Image 1 (cartoon, rainbow, N blue to C red):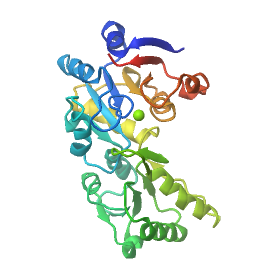
Image 2 (image 1 turned 180 degrees about the vertical axis):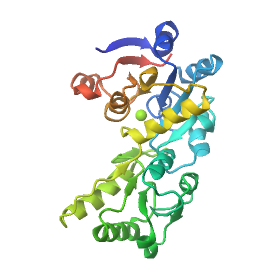
Image 3 (image 1 turned 45 degrees about the horizontal axis):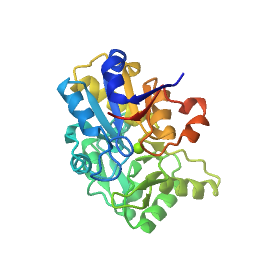
Length: 291
Ligand SMILES: [Mg+2]
């Protein structure tokens, strides 16, 4: 059952905060519309949550910029968040590396490792970018972003053809993403699926392990951080509300986790798309704007 409310913040004050202990926000289309451009009510909403000490985090599938850099896109819009409140899909690398027994090992990184190198070292992995060394690496990580693909993709295709069981971790499943300066970039997900398609034509079925929304790794990381850093040690997913503008990513991901889901009509989703959304992409709440 979907409930519609004009303003998220009014609903939160009157009712929402009784049902939820923490909030996860998408960034683009939810708090800002492009770099430095706030959506109406976003600064007030964040200030209110700070004033009430309500725990929240901003979730981004941008796995290629450090927290501080992504944070600046939001603070330039007059929204007073701190780098600590940003969670990138690449943060989820740590939990996945532990689960796969990769800690302390070399990982081949497609692309320029300089910014995502931070996440990789936080996960206790050693980034390697020299394609000649790919066979020494215990796993492959597609971080996305802008880089010269040819050498990397060729090396990854050949390595997975030789060793199909090697973990292929991908920052996010996104096909494309909006560039802060306008236009679109090609996402880590479509770079990975290009390799997967090549492998399938060799008869090899390879399933990448995606970190970003709607997949669970980023949500698991966010839950852990809220539990450990915000004094919510027993926080259950159903006490967390995810607020975002994209049905297939924010809403489907939250629903699969058993979290509350709130759709902002300020981004990519139209009324028509919402009417035709399958059950797993239907939000619990719909908001016309934040405040
Ligand atoms: Mg969005």
